[in-house]
Length: 87
Image 1 (spheres, rainbow, N blue to C red):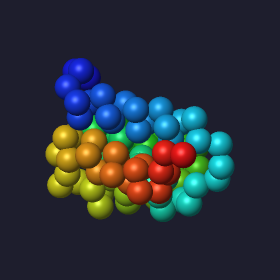
Image 2 (cartoon, rainbow, N blue to C red):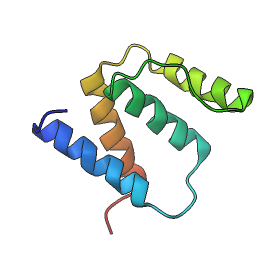
Image 3 (spheres, rainbow, N blue to C red):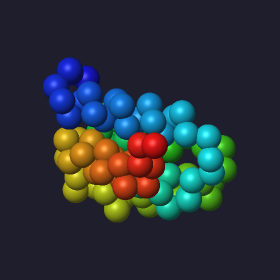
Image 4 (cartoon, rainbow, N blue to C red):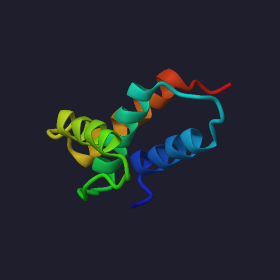
């Protein structure tokens, strides 16, 4: 990733999620998962050992399939800003 403002804000949002210690809703996490994978151009299959989890992750990716990597970064940032406001 480059150091342009969008990439910087995306990395900061990812760090915020990774350092968050409270439980987060599953639907929120699945959206973040899909946007993160698209933003990083990671098109491999979900790697969970549980088929049901893989199905949910695959569904999240399918729902976001028409999103560009840049749009995915911005959507990820927007979700984090909305659900995990800075304290």
